[in-house]
Every structure is written in C-alpha cells, then in structure tokens.
Length: 121
Image (cartoon, rainbow, N blue to C red):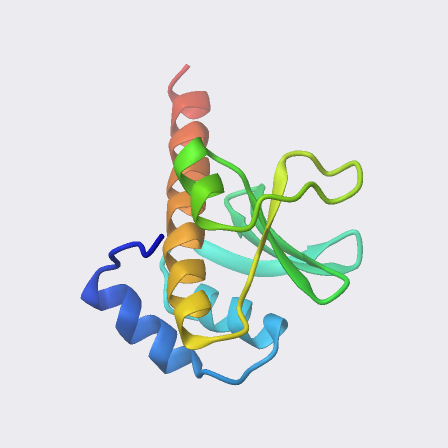
C-alpha cells in the first residue's frame, strides 16, 4: 500500500538525506518541525511534543507511538517486547523515509491534540 504524502513531506524527507542513521533522521525531523523537540528518554534519543514523547529510538530502531489504525496499516505490524503502544517505523529507503515523515507528523499532531485537551480541561 502506497500512501500519498504532501509535497512538504517529500521535501523534508529529501532534505534529511537518504542514507542517514535513525538518530540523524529523527534530529532532522525535529529540526524541520515547529513545536517538537529532541531529547532523551531513559538515556535513549526521543522526540517530544511538550512533555509527551511521540517517537523514540530503541536498539537502532525508530519507534513511533501508535495513534490510530491508519498509522498501523502504514508501518510494519509487530509488537516490540512489552511496548505494545509503540510501532517500529522503517527508515531504510527513500520511500520508507517519506512514510516515516508522514507517520511522525500524524503522531506529533495526535499527541499535541491530547496535550491541548488536557490543558483545556
């Protein structure tokens, strides 16, 4: 299944480079998106919206919080140990990176929406 991505996502993925490691990919994503920051979660790299994490790196794999069934259908379905709420995202090829940018954007937007709901209530 090929997902349509916006021209902006294509530019971001190409700007991040096609042959970089996962940490550099996540740093490039954070650098090109407002409202997200790069940090560490239990000593491992992670991306945050406010105080909430939406992506992290574990054992050289990019893991994204699963926000809906649509994001799960785009990425490979596999549970990672006890981390049932995290979905591995491939960043090996240029197509994988385009999909990863779209999935990370959706996850960050979903986490930002939950942060806004919690602040409003």
